[in-house]
Length: 272
Image (cartoon, rainbow, N blue to C red; front, side, top):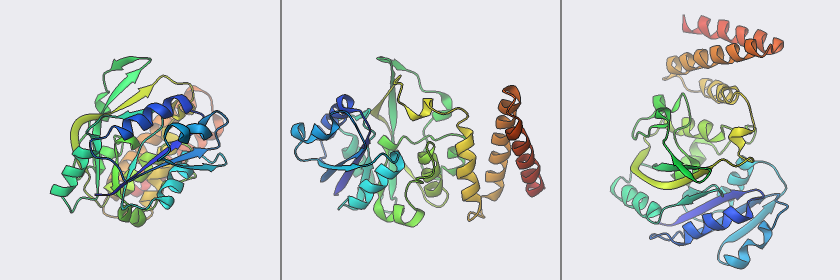
């Protein structure tokens, strides 16, 4: 099973080395490794001196979705594994996923459980990020439970549902996995086969307030063409807009209070 590893990165030369070491230590070696440098100004361009077999592509800073999409477009394999440059894989990560897909050829995407390290200390994962496999659309609605670094997906599936949305600064993974999960089964390898490192100031999840502002965009996009799960999507939109309204009231965001009230009224009408 031929696999392309796509690694987007931006000014993370030091941790990128750790990520790449974890790739080249895999018990099932990928066929191709593509590093997409999203406009770094550090030493990232020198990375192929240590890892000469990796393909390095530079682009002007356009965001993580653009970088991942460029990696997909330049891949030569049918299977794509994503790895964020501040994460690392455990040695059997790809091997366990390959074994799963060989036993379940009808399944075109899988992911694994994960270990979290914050400021050098392992932390317990919140219950809302509990991993499940199979028909997991409902479980994906509240938050993103699939880390990009844990995912292995067939290119055919990405071509069917679309790539990462480059208009979303964050929650782009939430958006894509929802599009996959609404009509496809997603396999789970129920082992902690990746390590996610947190506590860094440059993490996108720490950059923006009110992450649900981006999730509702993804849900509203999905609602336009997904009919069979319409009720679930509307219920989730109502819940998230009510949470956003509370936040807007708390911080006296007048224009947003009006917008969220209108959205709530609209979706309550659709629900009825």
